[in-house]
Each structure stands twice: as C-alpha cells, then as structure tokens.
Length: 162
Image (tube, rainbow, N blue to C red; front, side, top):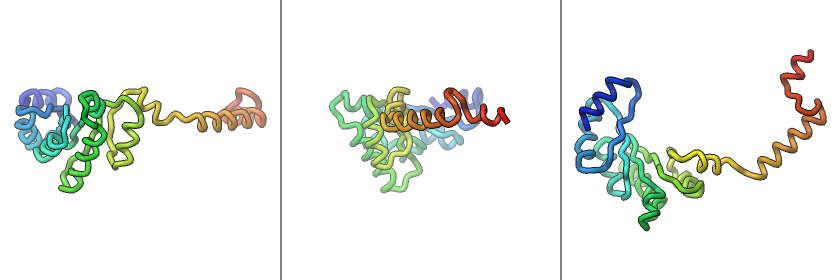
C-alpha cells in the first residue's frame, strides 16, 4: 500500500488523498503514508471504532458507508454521527467524509449532526436542492420578467438593445 501511494504521488503529485481501507494492512499503512507527507482518507468504515482508530492512525478523513451499514442492519447515520462526535471530543485532526447514501434524508440528518463533508450520487444531491416551492417562485419571477421585458428575453437582450 505504501509503495502504491508513493507511485501515485509521483505520477499525480499535488494535493493527493490516498484512499485506504480500514483493514489490518490499511491501519499499518496510514501512519507511514502520513509521515511521508501524504493525506489519507480511510474507507470502508462500518463502525465507530474503525473511524476512531483510523483518525488516531492519522487519516485526515474517515469515510463511513452510511447506506451499506443500513443494509446490514446497522444505523449508518447513528454510526457516522458517533464518529463525528468522537473526533470532536478527542480534538482529532480528522473529519467525517460520509459516503454511500440511499436518500437525501440521510444526508440532511448528518448535516444536522454537524458532519460537513459528504460524497453522494447525483440523484441524492439533486434531491437535496429540489423544492416545488422554489420551482413555483422561479416560474412566477420568470413570468413577471417576461411581462415586463418580453417573452424569452434576458437582461443581455436589454443591455444589447441600448
């Protein structure tokens, strides 16, 4: 794992995060890679202790798999929230990067708990910002604008008309 991380850094350079699983080999590699100046995202996390141990080993991000935990009968939102609180309690220099979401409610609950970093599928992200009231308000504004300046015209049209 360490040799692969070195090779990636040599090939890609820059601000690279090495993604390592929370396995025996991964836990052994995290501090070695961090000592070499690289940053680590610990992945495959399915328990609070795995997240805590990865952070203690030096991972910058710990990535609990929220929906995958739910599929195993584990409350993924609860585990990710516990990890976040533990990292803050022990003032560790790591953050939760929550992953594997089925729906936007899982994301919203983690945001409510203070988790500030997620990785999610486009459909889950779209559901976070979609709101029928917003759509209606924008449609009303566009209609009113069209009445004032003409259908299908934009501010650029008005400026260019001058």
